[in-house]
Image (cartoon, rainbow, N blue to C red; front, side):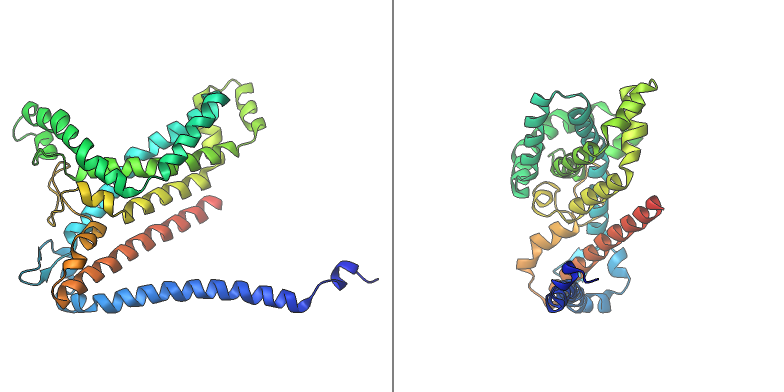
Length: 311
């Protein structure tokens, strides 16, 4: 018996659609490979001259054409993970409030405000951090803390630095403010996918709101939660202008939370236009390759964790 639906299909149209999809996927892989090859070729002179020491040395001296990426690498990792540690509980709290406790007339405008915060350009956050937050932080936190701590104590070691508000910790706070709206908005959408019957069943057996959220709702969307965490971390790793404004831009290892530092992205943004030698340019391109590999490693780890969680 003939199937009119199958008879009406066009094999040629199906083939064209399939090849167009294949071409799009192939083009994406080609572009990705082109980026990696370009960064590897451009940064090879730096790797060839300094070897593995390029990744372990903190010395960055354009005058003598000696470059080490350890300082920006450490600054990138510290600010990214610290900002994630600050933003994650806040994002979960905002999402839980909007989905579990806030009345509809209040939840909707707050959700819109969160989405609007996600659309603010990063340079605006950087300027606000430089001209408003950093002076306030230096006056209200750094200076009183420096006068209160005992010299030589662990707290003094952790917070020592020039009290100007431009340091690793303030850069991490600005990053946390930037990634918070993204994470909160996606967390909210994830929690909204939990069926109402699941929540009602939890309350029906006597669970509190905290228990329903922590033991039922979040485990229900745990795969998505892990993806949101990695999304926020990836955003923090690659942020440029906001961090450049407020991190202090020092190439050495940060010795405390209140010490100035740099990230890979801020170093490239500050120096690429002024690179006067081929080795300087090669070192900056090599930094770009290192940042790409770090981001790729984070995403690969996320995929591995997601696969294990799914199983």
